Length: 411
Image (cartoon, rainbow, N blue to C red; front, side, top):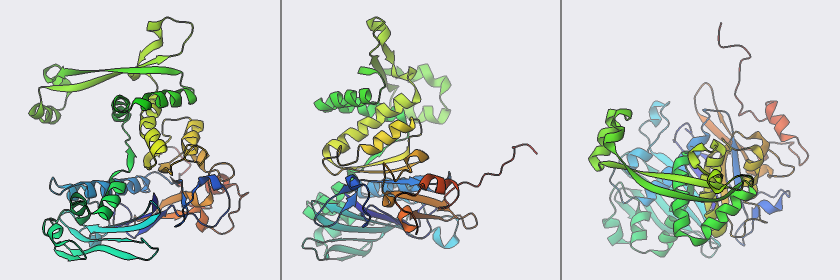
């Protein structure tokens, strides 16, 4: 479980910002707290803010961290994960800073990393096995290590994390932390990718299909079953509709492209079998989105884990978006699953029936500097249990709102 996540000099975040899932001492919605002897954490954190403020960069930062610690170096992994604050001259070549504090089996872990496009500049891991802080390792530069295994350090390249190499070497603490980071589930924005992953997941997991169908029926989509068929399309047949560069890249790997046709079976009573079965491509964007999303959400809820969603609810009815968030409340969530999501669905800004004040976060961008900030609703004085948070937000009480000039686009 994530306690908190900090990043700095990444995307629009020049200074360090921290998204915390550590429960504060407010009393509302105890069903949204995951209890632990070493501290209580929240089951979800929902992030609001205007377009272009930086909400997606919070997701991108976690994804970059996951890719960096899952890689053994090479393939320009650091280069792709290096997204510094480019507005400021002194930040363009400075390291990205990240910190992730975790709670795993009741023990706290604190992992920090700084890197640029070519090398790991700093890296450390501490844990609290007896409630007291103990250093697992620290890396002051590409070749400067403390409390690290010499053989592992010798094989750790400058663009590879020691956490990765120590995990490969079966260090139990590093394995535990790396598995937790790499195990974070990210719901891709491309529904086609999610749909394909969901279908294949059902083949590998016998219980997944029944749980998925149950979820789709609960969401009132009218779907009783689904199937899919894989195939190949020769590149020669689609050459004229592909950009030349895409065609050449595809041709270098294969003479054909793999395809998957997904079919859903509806519960229509006044039609024959053929009329009940339709291609997924003919379904609404919302149906496609929810089908793919459930493939990511169900294993996380069932097994415990962290699900990160960019633009939650972009194609969903607000009632379904609310239902997704409610899946992480204790009455549905037995294994301590967590949700981190950004959204424009203001219906989720509900402290009366849905979220605690410490679960609602805002991202706001300074219009002069271009730098973004992250802050929590619970940081504001005077917000009580009976406060109409949505009304206050729309009135500008918490900022993080677009300033729209009330005029047409034509002069």
